[in-house]
Length: 437
Image 1: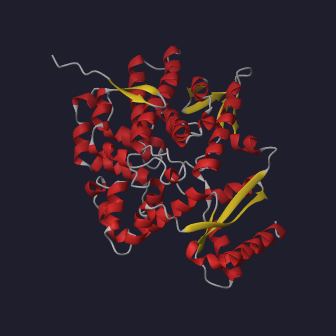
Image 2: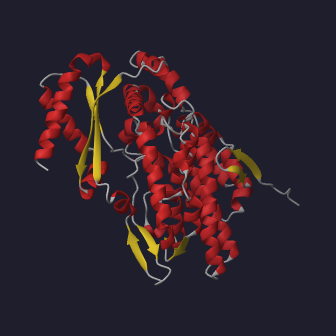
Image 3: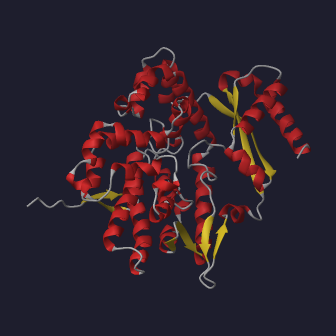
């Protein structure tokens, strides 16, 4: 008789005791996942909030835990209604947890900065790399062939497809609804990073979210996850907490200046980094410490890395403004980086001299840290009428307060003498924009 496999327990500072199934432990203990211990969850925030040194490793474990909670509550209702067999529920439960566990495993050092500076040149991102790592790393093939994993009734394709470009044919109705657990507006992913990032940044007052209520009042119907109407206030509160984290932590002016410094380092070090991206087995060796040590030895990046280690951030905020606008306009601004590029060009034209500066706004490519990224309507179920309606929480969130798009313009400290001229150019561009609104 085969020896019984027992669950492990991880003690997490945010969620308490987190159970780990035998097949999950195999993946967690692998080098592919252990490297996440050396990749910070927030690439630059520790330079402003010293406690924010938490990692992608603890985040993916937390998302696995929350994904299981969300899935269990919604799947149990299907079992109670006779729409799902208990054995089928277990399979879907394991799948949701693995989707949560694997969702960030493709991240490179400095996470989204690496996506934008390096991976975009290869026409890929951390999600697509996740799928490739599952299929192409020999050790992953061994783990997916293990007895523990086979007992789940799942395949490696089942796990990988949540990170691949969406295709309706890949998912059954229950799986389509469960995708909401890791990708929806109040997903396990967003829930964990609000709770975890606020805890480590020392702003726990922003994590007062009713995530359990949202999970307990969500249910699966016809391939969708529905939210009961009585929880609309809880969802708006969730949005507010996310917005507060965005305002005070993720987009803190010094964090954004540091993000640019990190991006510049990675861009200047592409020649050194590229071989590690072209070979997935070498990619697994990349983490923030090893990458910085590699670039520290290169003449083109040696001084930049030294500045990073000494927290000598070369950028200084020169101009900041919030512009009132419409909901449709702000939706375009935050999803399209060409708007910021246009502002950069207009300011440069007004400057009539050379200065090293950059425009920073609410746009962030392929990252959940922006409070606008990944937004979609939520299907609300009215318990009194038994009807469904599509609701855009973002509209209600901003109703009454108006819509504002903020921009910041940072100047390189070496060009500090031109700071006043840059500010004047920014004001002229802002004035022209207001006149033509």
